[in-house]
Length: 226
Image 1 (cartoon, rainbow, N blue to C red):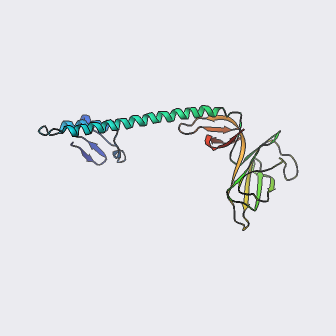
Image 2: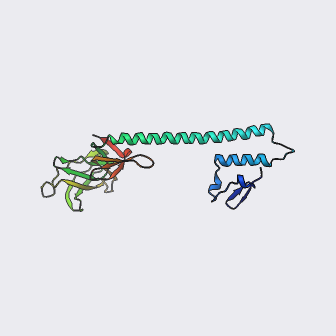
Image 3: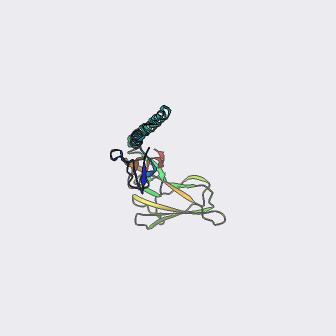
């Protein structure tokens, strides 16, 4: 086969079968159309006094069939992934109107009370403090929880501020500071509860679940549905 490479352009010396690459990165791979053009060009430019051996021809055809099969397999896999994503998106619609627990630091307060929230620790903390703020960032309550053991915990808050008055319904946030017996900071994850108000299908990947008065989260970020 006669082929020349100049800069980032590859050509087969035949205008009809020319293969061009706009960038060096494109030069790194060939698709099945490129493979066929190279194969045809090889037949055109082979020595007529020394034609390709039948074994070599069979090998070339087998390679082409292999490339074609790989492309078809990839296309089939892509269709399966798209179908699975569509099914996942439809199943996520069933979550609308349900309460879910996920990683976050929002606290929802309604007339019926405070939605569950809490913390997760990978190591115990001997002391800890939780600060609750309103939507404007003002501190409404500080809770001294006297530390946590390793694991997942629910924080108890009666919905009252530091003066003992019930806070107004709405969205609040909380931060946690914890330390071990030596006074070193302990890493803590926070979790909360929210109501699913909608589902947004992403172009690729898992759909996102919209939380009422809260963020949009990925479907696989949900820990519990109630």
